Image 1 (cartoon, rainbow, N blue to C red):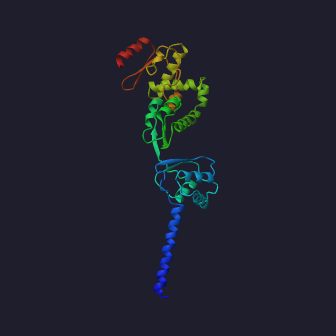
Image 2 (image 1 turned 135 degrees about the vertical axis):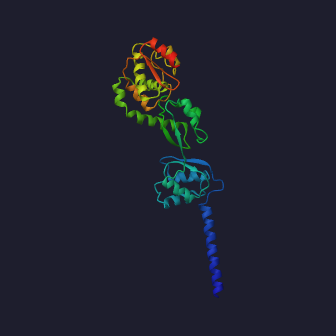
Image 3 (image 1 turned 30 degrees about the horizontal axis):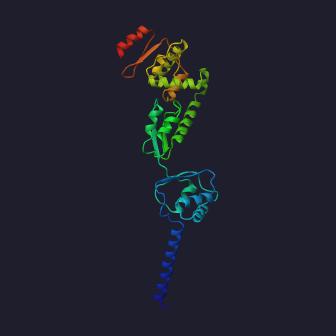
Length: 294
C-alpha cells in the first residue's frame, strides 16, 4: 500500500468518525425539532433527576432522557439540578441545558419596577405591563392587601405572577415594619391602626415634619370625637375615626409619623397648590387660610 493510499484511508476513517460522532450527538444531545423556544419551564424543589429527565423529553426540551441524565451526572449533578424557572429563550442542546440546570443559570431578565409611596393597589397593577407576560392584573387587584404592598424599587423576574409579586412586596413590608415594632408598641395602637393612619398622612402631606404634625392633629381629632375630615378619604367627613382600611400603600416615613405624632396646638391644616402646609388653631383661622391659600 502506497503512502497515498494510506493517507486516503486515514482521511476516510477521520471523516467517517466525525460523521458518526455528529450523528450520535444529534440523536442524543441536539435540541429537538419542536423545541419549545420562548417558553419558561419550572423545576420543582425535590424533583428527582429521573423524573425530570423524562418530563423534559416529553415536553420536547431534550431528545433523550437517558443522555440528558448522563450529561447532568457528568457535570457533577448526581443529586439533581437546581429548582426554579428556566427561560428557554432559544433552542439549546442537552449538554448546555444540563450545564445551566446544574448551576442554576435561569436566564431570566430582571426588570426594575419602582412603586411610588402612596400608590394604591389599582395604581400598582398597571406598572406590570407587557414585560411580565404571566402577571394577571385582575388577580393582583383582587388579592393584594391595600396598605401592605410596600412602596420601593424592586428588581423582578419577567416570569413573575400576581401571587409572587404580592408575596415579595408583603415580605418587604414585614422587614421594613420590623424596624418600627417598638415604636408601634409604644404608641399603644395596633399595627393596623398605624397603617390606616399612615395611608391618610401619605395622601395629605409631603415632608417628614408635616407628616409628624399632621399625625398629631389627626390623632387629636380622633381623641376628641371629631371626624378626620380629610379630602383623601371623603367618608371621614361623615364618620368619625379612621377609614375602615388603608386608602393607599404608605412609605416608611409616613408609618413612622403615624406611630410618633408630634404634639402641637393646631387642630386644622391645609396644603396649598405648591404643596406647602398651613396650620390653624381655630376654625376661624383655618377659614382665613382657605381663603388665602386655596
